[in-house]
Image (cartoon, rainbow, N blue to C red):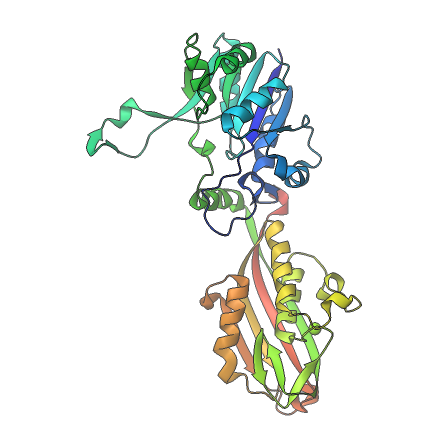
Length: 382
Ligand code: MG
């Protein structure tokens, strides 16, 4: 008995709102992506013979990165509509049954997969997992009896021959799910089995936030610390925390020598075990000459995000005799909070002198210390 799985990840439209440049199947979810979680749910199920993804032709690079190391069949390119994408995918399959799954449902359970397979083995030609509708319903301004309704999830299971012939006979341009295609062929009834509320689809940004919370439930909080010094030389301003502050000297360095952002960047790298700023942005590379140090912090925060982490808090101490930090504290705090996408309350800026002692006391340089707290996925429960 061969059971093939088709994961549909070919859509290009997004209802996720602004700021989501990465296509939905490839959004990070913990250490993985949405698509990889969906694929692994089926690869880990003992009854599944093969898993094939239907992808958008423009997403090849995302796909390769997302499924690296997984034993998937070669991907199939989707069409202009979901209906065409599934039809393309079905052509590539050779099996008795097919389970068709939305890539955007990464929490599909092994129990749901088993129930769909059991119904197919029992002779059903089309099987859909259903969940009760929990919200009250109204239709055209009138209350509706919600007990008459169920919501349909995936994977939907089919006899492959029956579904292929239903697709071949299909006249409508676009049908929203595969059970309706089988029903449109007029020959088969659909079997409803109990789905699982955790099998929800990531459609809107809120769904994605909920998915991240489900994955990140197993997190640990760690801290990273960073320290940096730059020499003061003749000049007319310094840059601290990305803010230009008039001074009779400037900070000397290969980049813009922003000690504050360098210390924070090092703290972030420390929290995720990624060495230090010099390893990632070597002064030997000319592209960093005069660089805006915001770039270093943004890149370190991207590394944190990709590893499934979340920045919680930054505490920064600037150590210098001059310039006076006080008048610029709010601007520095606001700029760092914006860069780190943190609320102001999670960013603290302290400043101290060293009572005219040492190199900072003599005005030879400025030092900065930073501590950050981050949530990381617990390595034990990856
Ligand atoms: Mg530095």
